[in-house]
Length: 267
Image (tube, rainbow, N blue to C red; front, side, top):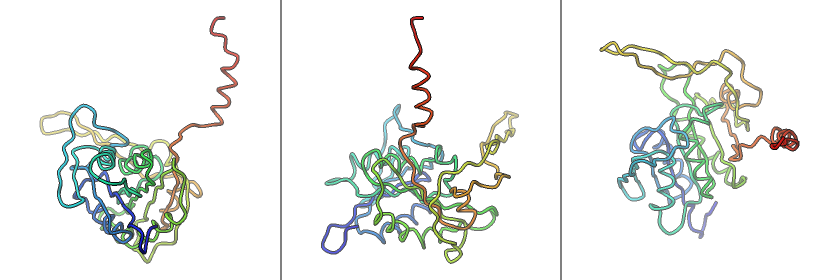
């Protein structure tokens, strides 16, 4: 990480909860502990669950809110692309930080998450990228523990930058739903799995008698996998997971090669 007489680290901060989200404010403060050159480019409105989607059928609008701070009428992926290709002049960022998401991005969440997608897009554009999420407690009446991410985010990021990671990998960090001094440590974990049947569809009826639906997750009754991101945050630890852009399953690929090697399409 640059210091002393070197130019400061250039950091792009984005999210999927929108430009006014409290988690974005937390992450901006974390980024400013690391550098004086912090740019914020985030969606105009909430984009939770947008995954790695692009806006292709309508124009994007960009609103400049302040120096190095912009809102974009699109998805998290749009924001990172716009920031790196158009808004940040001179040189591209040295680091993309996405979040802090309101709610965890563990297990299957990573395939739906716009927070993960912003870090994924940064990675695809050649910029080291980290996604940050603050897991919610099981008691939804209690306040969100933003202080946990705020207290530990800079230290976790510094250690990651000192260590480094491959160009086709992004880092997924989840903070547990506990006070900063109750964190049990940092666990390097793998992507977990909640189990079958945890996604549910809640059917309701509006004032005109028409059906409408809410999608959601139920808490898994099964114990989490050992060393998974789910187990880590349940244990009060900060979870750090390396996610790979290459989704190929190489063992299956090898068996398919053998299977198709003898296929005679003319027979």
